[in-house]
Length: 401
Image (cartoon, rainbow, N blue to C red; front, side, top):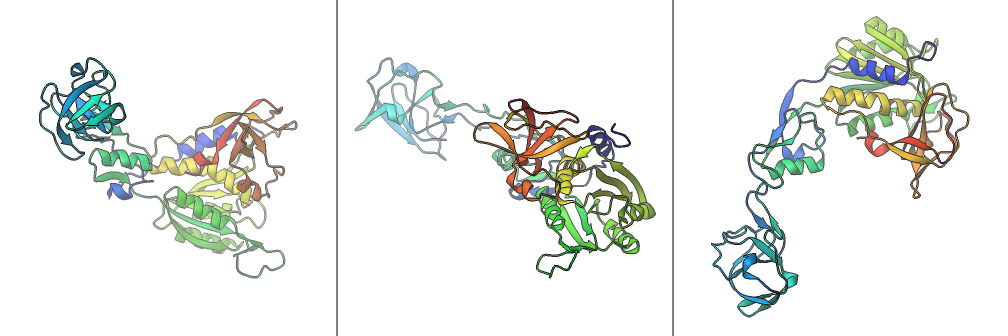
């Protein structure tokens, strides 16, 4: 604990403790299931491969029929993929193609590059061993085996695997419905004239894109001015039919920060200050049955807090079983001699030399640092870093999906 602030780990565990996972399941075509969360483990109803088959183009034969390189065998049949040959007679070979079933009696395949076709015969230029270039029935997946676990966010390769065992549909949890809005009388949409004191609203674009990347259905309630009555009105409307209300701005305790009293008036609120930088202000509560998370208005703080706090909350609510992102231990190609009392997440980029370097301006207003970087360096509170030491690096590739 840092003063009256929760440590990052305390806040993380507390937030995940509030998760109420969705329970509704729907069946969707496997073709469009990528990005969804599998609700029930998938078991294979077939062996994969379903039969012994050739791993390459070549000749199927009995290894015992080729005692020496240069052995000549008559070619008795031709087996392309998608067809089934007949039993192989002893002392003969079958022309076979990748994926074609191995004919009964054959125990190996010799790749065509090691063979010479000569009229009706083939000359084998090597001494094969039994089982060579043969994919055995069920060697990848056995009938009845669990193919995909429940709680898995389906990747392109996962839906391909499901299709390979004949799954035309998959049971998945329904999508989360998230209402989002920004607060601040100073906010202006791009394309509109920028008045004195105004700033363009970047958080609205960022949060919508982040939520879409996590497979959420997003309804945008726009920009809410710094007024308590209007904030309460939007909260009431946003709670209808949504699992989560996500806001940016207005969660501090200034005179113009109305989100906290509005949420307390419409529901209940845990107001957190987290010992993290950038970040610190984060609000969680419930409004008329919907979860509520309020992010800082600063764009960099909002971005980092979303990745580290909101993302795992959403994944857990979606039914994902593993929500913590993987990290790498990389060489620091920088010095960080004056650490903060809070845990710091520095915008950083992995370089071609296998190290990690920092964006020059780590200020919380430097939104361009989030584009330059390809991840975050996690610096424990009060910990200096010297060039050459190992630091924990969180790649964007794992934080944005």
